[in-house]
Amino acid sequence: MAKRAADEVLAMGHDVIESDLYAEGFEAVGGRADFVSPTGGEPFHYQSEQRHAANTDSYATDIAREQERVAAADGHIFVFPLWWGGMPAILKGWFDRVLSYGFAYEDGMRYESGYFSGRAALLGTSTGGTERRFSESGDYGTMAQVLWPIQHCMIEYLGLRTVEPFTAYASPRVDDATRTQYLDAWSASVRELVTLVSTPGRPLGPPPGWGRPRTWVSS
Image: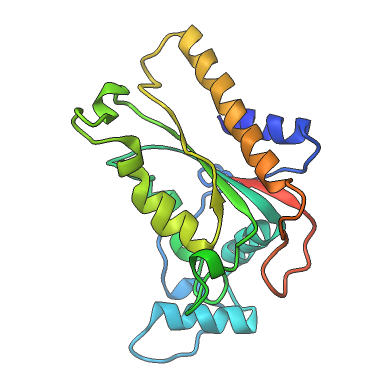
């Protein structure tokens, strides 16, 4: 799905940056090592240290790299398997460490007034469970209910406009024909995102202070 998304974005004339967290060995656990020049305040307060690092450009190398990728992107595509009703720990850790206080949000800068207003995002998930299990009468509730904490409390919290999330149900167990159908439908979702971001009259661009060219991030 990540490769198909990148291919679609490139085919529509945009640039792509892929952030492969597993391949790059991204550290999911936040802590003191996230900051090159911490304040030294005690007790250690993670959010305050994030604000200080944002003000002094003193994040650890991996966080700074990912923030540059995020700042460069007008469209964000997050591809992940659904684990225990949410995203894998490595991606949740990416949100915790990279989309930090002072960089991605702060008091008064959320939702419609968020730093990323004018940009857009798409969630692409795969599941082990069948579509029936993710229904009103199923065991887990609808996918809209399952993804609400991610879609609304994380993605839209940043000010990002959203395309309806895409799900490849029971992906380890379907046949090749169904996989092909999934990928074709996924391609349509990606094209919808690109079209949304490319709509004339939409204010686009990185957060204040980031003079980066347009590109795309797939995590």
